[in-house]
Image (tube, protein in one colour):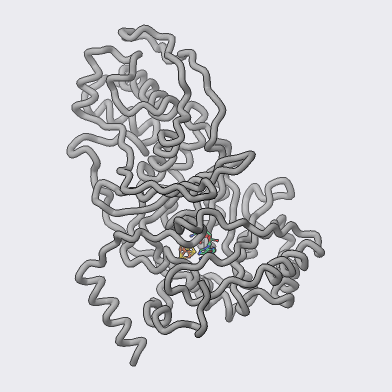
Length: 425
Ligand code: SAH
Ligand code: SF4
């Protein structure tokens, strides 16, 4: 898609200028009526829920451990299938608890094999997740919020009007659902007899077969560091050794630059960091990543330099969207190299050709320009691969995610009308 005028009127009037603060989000509704959804709780949380329901401490500890294993190692959603839990206890659990999954609204497959799911939460809020298969890996792109408050000008998600944080359960639920859809929970049977009761007998035997889902990137909808606690809770579960057991080296969290949360992300979550830099001077970054008005480039790069765990073996990825005549000159490339060297950053640069969406105010740089930009950075000794767009035909590529079904409320419509008035006046 190409645009002749810049920026087109529709993009100018739909922008919310300077809207860069996190918004207050409502509480997450219960799925399963009065029953408690165990997905997203910590191990202690599950144990506590079982105790609250009436089990004594010892039984709650044992059952909690078994249930955890069934949920996260085996992908089981029915208590009836948890064969090492006493038959009489299973209906008791079913009455009180559920092992939830997001509802799948639509599932699409791109002609390059990329898959996109539109999911619905219990309150009907919709968010998307994307699976990108490659020769040597399979990457799940996970959402952290419904929409995003940050309004980066090149990002479709930023134009969504309805925003709420996803809960840890809704975040980890995406990973569980992906493993359901890819059919890759370990097969085989537990060794314990169906009626085994009081024994701590969850050391069953099964064969864990090869996985398609090997990597996770927090690069779907939303700014993960504006939903820190829930993202942390979800990733801790994903990394738990007796469960999904993904290594922190296979998980990447991408932030647009929420500086005050970056050190905590490194210390408390410890996954790889990707930073959406996208511009090398204040004027351009202020325009395309409005959060820059709050946390500027210098502050951001200093926080990157201090990121716990970053070193030459675990580099920070700097994402850079290629926007024609906006941030793509040789001078920009040179300045990018200078900044990365000035802050002594163990860095790699990921060049993302801009993915268009209806009404977007930018164009993608030409392939020659992207290559030239990449070469300038490579010449300075910094890796700068060009990311191949995936799933563009189903609007699954970076920055294209937006729930089509989002309906603005009356208050939202009023706000949009006011903004239009202000922009025109
Ligand atoms: N909110 C986080 C993570 C989600 S976006 C962040 O901004 O980092 C994942 C990446 O896609 C970010 O680098 C983002 O800037 C980039 N992106 C957004 N819109 C895009 C578009 N239309 N084309 C290409 N990349 C885009
Ligand atoms: Fe939000 Fe990231 Fe999109 Fe910016 S690029 S609007 S931070 S999802």
